[in-house]
Image (tube, rainbow, N blue to C red; front, side):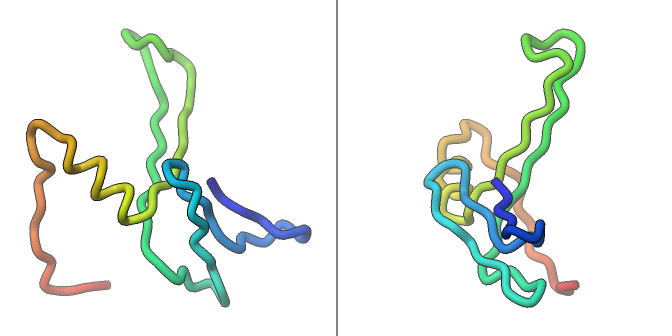
Amino acid sequence: MKIYNEHGKLTGLACNSCGRVILREREIWKEDFISIQKEWGYFSQKDGIRQTFDLCEKCCDKLLEGFQIPAETEEMTELV
C-alpha cells in the first residue's frame, strides 16, 4: 500500500502482508519489494475487479515457500 505525505508525494509503502513500512528518501527506496496488480476478467469470480498489493522481500519469500511448483529463478549478470 503506497503512502503519501500531505502534499501528495510518495514517501513509502506498507507491506500488505506484515504491515512493515519501507521508506523512500530522495526518490530512492531504502529496501526492495514487489508490487502486484491484477485485473480480473471473464471466467473469474472477480470479473471487473482490480487488486493491487505490495510485499516486502521477507513476505514474498514466505509466499514463494508455499508454492507446490517453485517459481522460476535465474541469476542476472547485469543489473540495471
